[in-house]
Image (cartoon, rainbow, N blue to C red):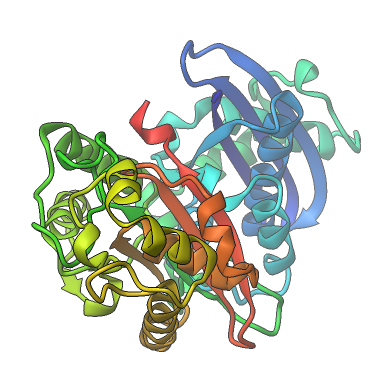
Length: 397
């Protein structure tokens, strides 16, 4: 998957006053400049200009490749914190712009990073060039016509604006955003959803052999490959910067995976029994073929009926779904408006997705869920859910 870096900036000389934005798209692998955008906005606030710059940069990246992942870098702490979901957006001018920006790419494919002003020089130059042209009477300028500020009254205003330190800018951003909230965009009257990022544990010795490994078996630890997968997942989640809490299944492989992520994020791990894997009874540790040879009738019944249990009084899919639904409701209430990493197993994660989609039980057999993959479901205050990601393994490549 292609990756872009978007750097964006906006400014207003007077706040509100004559304003403009600049945005540039780089190829993350080569550093090549792929697109530049700038525009004079008329009289608006600095924060609105910053959001307009973000929106322009995301749209330029989308035009280049709508399937790409994007890493946004801006010197506006307000925009970065709000788009990362850590600060709530209350200002009526910014809220629709932020929601529009969140819809350009799926939110899980966009990450945000604050950078100091001196590392955002290209976007800053484009924004100041747009303001210069606007002050001179041009309503809009293209990126190709933008030049660095040279002199005159417009340049004096630009230098005065640039004299605002990063600390002062951050302080102003903090004053503008007074409430902490989670990532994710719901309908305007629903508020921020509870978003569950679902991480399957890394490989164990049983995983590549495709053996049944539930909550009633040997409780294997991660293999060397599995530990590497957990570290990679942790690094990817740290780059995204949206996880606010971690909850894991009590089994060894999930707790070990969660611990690796928690070290990256500086968070503690809570354990919830409801996130454990299905108990596969006498099938634990066997391959599908071995189960078919030893327990053919029980296997056929299990494949045909969600209420059928694996041999030896294992747990049926219906029982698993009842447990997951209760766990979901409890965690949604506990983490309302927050983004939480749930480290679990194949059947529970597929069940979260199935229930969110309203899909039938047999859909569990039609989903592929890889080790250390990421999925995501958002839950809104009206009881609706939205599946935002499924079986993402890009961080492992």
